[in-house]
Length: 514
Length: 79
Image (cartoon, rainbow over all chains, first blue to last red; front, top):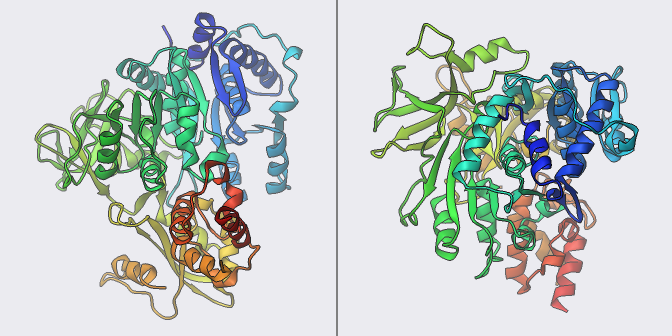
């Protein structure tokens, strides 16, 4: 029985030692080699001070070394923490502080970047994976006492107070999800699974572990293909991808790019979307042109381990379809709708916030009992034993078939390019800069695809100009969180009668005209 | 083909965080806020405006990295 995710790799190494486990650009690694490297580098990490049950971040761009790092960290009995190499210093620092770690794994180039970002940080051992000589350590299996309830990874999402929140995911949550996915999608060792999502984004969990469990080949999308997405279309065919999982905006861009041709995607069996609302017109186009592919819409926040619901799209959506359902709960997960009166319902017609229970609900936020208690509540239907419900903050409606439909965010948390972002975090970062008096961040969702979504901000400044502010934002926010429209405002900001910023009036002020 | 035509397309489709008028021909557009999403819109608008088609080999970050890089690419495709 598989109880830890690293067992997927050692088991596939035993069954398919010479099959390619992972490939990126022109490099690849067999299951046997990935497993053996993981064993020896794990031993090295332990000698460098990795202690079972602790957190070890890795900081490097996507590539085979990043996969080797995460496998090794798991084998050392630790939980891995992927960190975006484009993170500004403040975010990086706050993540390292909350992990209380003194070890970080990088590649050669990223080690330098890390020193540039945090020149003053003391007591941090930086381990360059490229400098490691695998023959210096035994590569046989380790004595690995990790339990299925131990943590496998921590992923940092955006937090409303400006401090990122670390979502803690145990092995059993991933295994429950992955075992179902491999079975449901019929993934086996002949498959070629792509990995488009960044490793610090939990959609990548699907790609990595369905491939590793099945003994399939994982194809990492190199970063350079992402800056101009249409190249990805040919890459899918060149690599012979059979399972492609992406955020819906990738699909929309494929269609807009005019690069889709008849006869493409001939080997693709599954196209799975998750991470943001899936536009029906994009699905309609794809299903009409590539009817041999099975299209599935999945849904779930990081806090419940990638996806808790799924909807296989059997028929081409009608031209007037407003939404693609996010569907029904997968096995071992259960969905409830909490209506405005606070009642839980699973009946057709129910509308309100989606609450989720089940085996893959995370342990909450690292080192933050208060935020954990606010989002993970005791199931009122089972008051006599520990039974957490995760409150997603997403508004849904249950239709006549019992399928859930995503209606929008319950608060000002937004989805942008697949990232979950609290507008409040951007606001507090901007407000932390010198000379910023007031700032309100607003979001234009593009009216369901009519135009690209955009983040904007209304600011009032004292003794500085917008251009300088723009420059400074790059130092405190990741690129996807930087408002693309900054508007200067003098005088009173529009407010509602009860004194809150009037975002409804601020939004058109920021986004209209030039 | 004029630089001003490219500037006007950038203004409409680049969705930059820095005003196009503040950029010089060599300024890095990705530093000015060009995203992968906007690159596709920019690419399509350039194809429409100049009646060209970017081959896959030119669909790299480099091609769209500055006003002068775009100008060079368009001129190359127009032959």
